[in-house]
Amino acid sequence: MTRAVGNFKRKYFALGDLPVVLLVLSAFVLGLIMLFSGRGDDNLVAVVSVRGEVYSEISLAQVAEPYDLTVEGDESVVLHISSDGVEFVSSDCPDKLCVNTGLLTRSGQSAVCLPARVSVKLVSETGAPSDAPDAVAG
Image 1 (cartoon, rainbow, N blue to C red):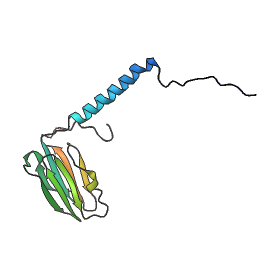
Image 2 (image 1 turned 90 degrees about the vertical axis):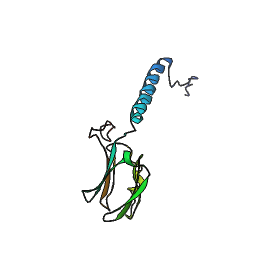
Image 3 (image 1 turned 30 degrees about the vertical axis):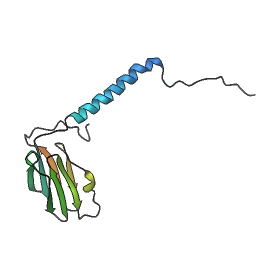
Image 4 (image 1 turned 180 degrees about the horizontal axis):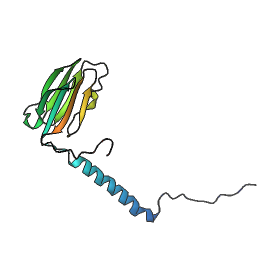
């Protein structure tokens, strides 16, 4: 016995769902705006450490011309320092994970080359805690 299935059209959204969808979409856009609006920390200091000891502290606000800093750790690494931020540009280590970290631009961000035992962390010059989202807490 064959049962006839009616000509049903599946509705994905009802008219009453529109306010909820708009509310969720506006909350998402507002969250993105809040996340990226505080990107310009003016008083950042790059703290470069080798084997856990501070190697150099560089105020990014005082960097007039970008330059490369070669750091000799267990392996040699090259950091690109500019007023916009700091990044690993090359390393003698085999995996090059540090090079793929990208540009550090906000207080609290850090990058490490484990084979070279070289780390870079951006901190606020004023010592105030960063209001940037945390990777764990959000």
